[in-house]
Length: 298
Image (cartoon, rainbow, N blue to C red):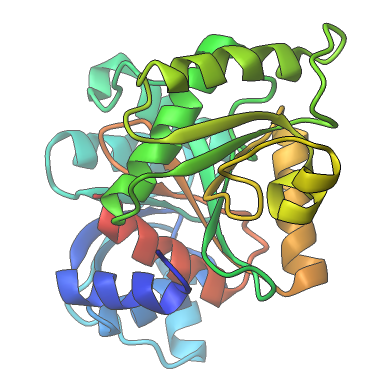
């Protein structure tokens, strides 16, 4: 069981530096997190962006850029292309989205010429430490796939399970979230949930336990499960929440951060390399946690 982010940070430090390309390194929190993570032994950054801004930030905050490669690019498309090319050529093992447009960066990752694609859909995972919950919680997808269909949800769920398996969680308990537990054709996520649960019973998600459709209250409360007279092996103890769409995932994750003081990291998975990716407005600590997680997935 992963009880806190300290376990993730310890694992990443123990593993040692992974070479990251930082696409759009000319951002204060981004650069500070990269330098801090380097000092902690979690990453060796290659910085792509505006050198003038990078040096200005480093001088203002007394950050050492000694022996760090800095590549001069200013436009988002050029930054993204350069980053993807370096990853394709094996010059780095992970990617960090900095001060650059997410769609532009992911377009470069998905470009067939860069050979970074797999047969999976790219999806975003938010790994969260919520003070009132007893272990780390993974929410997906709140950042990439807007309204996933069933086939996309299969990939999203597999991506999330593989992440937790790599972190040592097995079996994984996953909830397919909905407004309630009743199957309703007007709520496509409930119909999809039934199919995902059936796949789980057939072993198509390995040893993982998949349940749904399930409302949020029952996901976190065995008492709610008892009152609703629903037998569950997951209620009160999920590892993964698979949300119906990107808005639900984004609102849920940010709500936990701002109202429940949760810690969060964000990584896009499904490509050959992990992509540390969160909002540009996030603080340094969130970037640092995202780097630690991507380190373990590279």
